[in-house]
Length: 177
Image 1: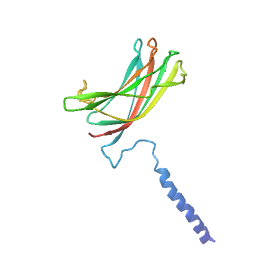
Image 2: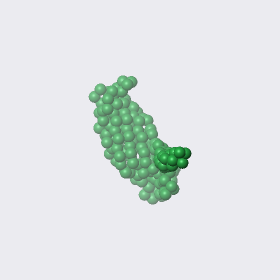
Image 3: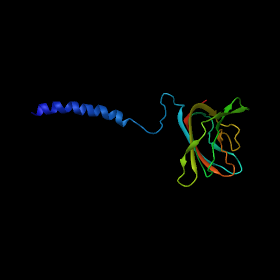
Image 4: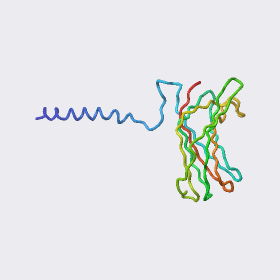
């Protein structure tokens, strides 16, 4: 009787042991790519305001030196107290090193934030997200030393008489150029 009980429980234990490995191997945080050691996850968030009487505002992302930043996803969330405010344009600014003494900048149009509903603290919330493949080098000529803020976000709105506050996140990875 004990022999048959041991035989029927062994396959069950074997299935549990096999299934436990993949379940324990799932991670929710970015990890280094062991096949590409020069590649590391990169994510930065900034908050900024669009103050009257200006129709745009900038978010500047830090870029430590000696890395190339591959940007894969950009999210923007803005809150405005203007009832008829619209956020028609958003641009991602990136920098490319051409030589030891020359850099060039490019501006990429992003999906503009769209109305998503009222804010719980007053005003309206606008959100936008863009999936893309872009890269930016670090800034070798930054005022505070190499690195700087070579990645920027420029967000526009139509109600210049009211202020708006925005937060944005860029996600991707770094590589060594």
